[in-house]
Length: 169
Image 1 (tube, rainbow, N blue to C red):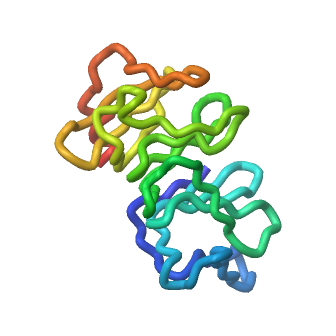
Image 2: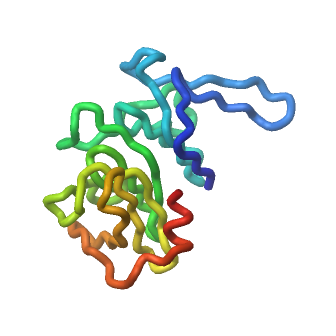
């Protein structure tokens, strides 16, 4: 799996195949090149590519020619996505202006302050070996260790260690 965050590409994503392959540019359906500002990328083992943008998450299916919007309902108008992480079950999560989003799996869902987050604007996410996540807030609240269980977000017990915070930076 490959992940990139805080990359800020405007206009699309270019794939440079190994060897002498011809580079291919992917844009997003329903946006202008100037609107498709990519902030984070997540590549899944099956070839699916997710882009976190200033407009929200976009998905490029294997073999597709353009990214498609993949935002969940209930987010802010510019539902920027700043990072991705997968849990042990292969569910993909995104963080950004609209909280924590479970984008794939049986029950896509958005988690916000109403679900016990300290703030809706999250800037980073890291999966820990116990399948919990450390999420970093954009503003002063710092970080939290969280676990998603079904339709519930739980604040996980235990301190967030220094090396876990360093991974978020």
